Length: 248
Ligand SMILES: NC(=O)C1=CN([C@@H]2O[C@H](COP(=O)(O)OP(=O)(O)OC[C@H]3O[C@@H](n4cnc5c(N)ncnc54)[C@H](OP(=O)(O)O)[C@@H]3O)[C@@H](O)[C@H]2O)C=CC1
Ligand SMILES: O=C(O)C1=N[C@H](C(=O)O)C[C@H](O)C1
Figure 1 (tube, rainbow, N blue to C red):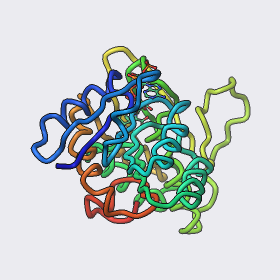
Figure 2: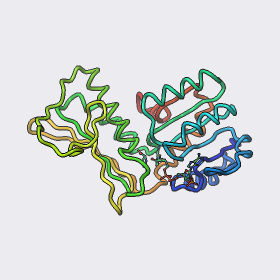
Figure 3: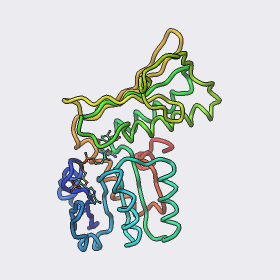
Figure 4: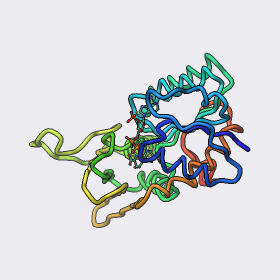
């Protein structure tokens, strides 16, 4: 039995993870903690799963590495700088493995993969993410990660800058610009988690969209990561390699 602890256990995602771990025959839940809870039982775990907040996650990872525990992280907020900080923590105290994924849903992972492949073939690419209004951050971690991957793919392919003749604009009218890719965030009651990547050429358009309707959509990916992280030394970003669908 693989022993699992959950950070953020009473949050929306944490509750779902607790249920999924309890329902898995090969996993044992040894601790379910929120901020301020005693962490004594966490030290018995093989793997900690973190769905907390962008403000809390770095110190949680640091705590796990200090205690020699492997960590699967779904919490958002991971810029390239933060990923480097995690690598530095692992270099300073080897022994733990860390897997961080902006999205554990198969549909979302494939959406990001297809969008990245398609991006160099189009003159314009923008990202529109749509979420429930209680979401802790904007833009979403998935959208930020998609934008960075699209920008990198276009840079590798030698794509020219995207056309954009806007000269008069209200602050924010063009959304956030992440590595030069515009990202638009919609927060709407009734939605859960959705993203479209829209790609345009003269006379044609491609839309790549994924929809998560419930938090159970993340659980196969989370449990796959929990089972795999022990065999993946250092930092793994994304779950593409676990699913066998190409580069992360
Ligand atoms: N990668 C993926 O596939 C997905 C990622 N997410 C991301 O997961 C994160 C959580 O989302 P969601 O569940 O909706 O958020 P919630 O606000 O519902 O839950 C966050 C939980 O974390 C707890 N928490 C805060 N700080 C700590 C800490 N230091 N140690 C332990 N627990 C802590 C909070 O407890 P308290 O209120 O007591 O502080 C709260 O229960 C977000 O970053 C979200 O974007 C969401 C869905 C999928
Ligand atoms: O907070 C959420 O709900 C979600 N967060 C993740 C993100 O920011 O990308 C994943 C998914 O979009 C749901």
